[in-house]
Length: 147
Image (cartoon, rainbow, N blue to C red; front, side, top):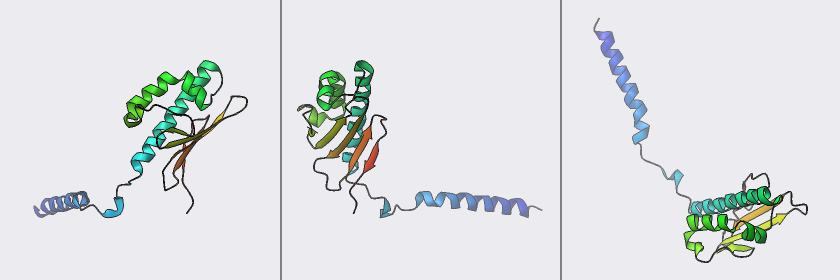
């Protein structure tokens, strides 16, 4: 009679420890850190900043702006983001396209009616061909060269 509760308890303990074993297993080398990840995150962040500046431009002036226009109209926002997230480049400030920051190339085309834009942002020295794309919908797409 006392045999069943003991067997049940042993089975529960085996199941419990069996579930915990994978947590203590050694990590394999399949999840090696990506050396380009930091640069890609910085490119994505910069594109989000530009998309937000474009939204501010549309809200305030009624149309999207070129890079030069953004530097003029949205300078406070752009410089605040630069100082906060790109401290190494902040002393130089934003430059003219294509290399708007050291290591970042921008291609920004505003539609002739000012109601849309297309952005391509890439690392100036990126050997993988990684780039990010966006437009007035602020949807960001990642791309890279075909191998």
